[in-house]
Length: 95
Image (cartoon, rainbow, N blue to C red; front, side):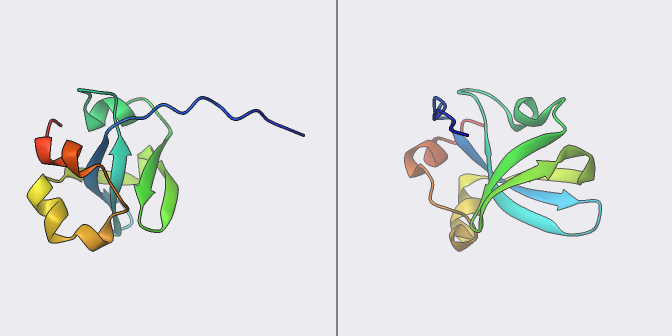
């Protein structure tokens, strides 16, 4: 079966650390609409994409205890834990 490539929509990536009800955590990027919020990206979704250093993950919303939205300085302190990102957008901190 052949699928046509879907249209790719570029969205800003917001650095987060997700804490799970199981006690673990992951760092990565949640994609938001321009001038959007992380909550808007995950609200009312059973799963949402999280881009990590290991690749794209689908995170089940019901397994989340809380989400820490990281500042640009937080991102810089642990930059190796994140995949490549738009540094220009991250410096603006418009999330």
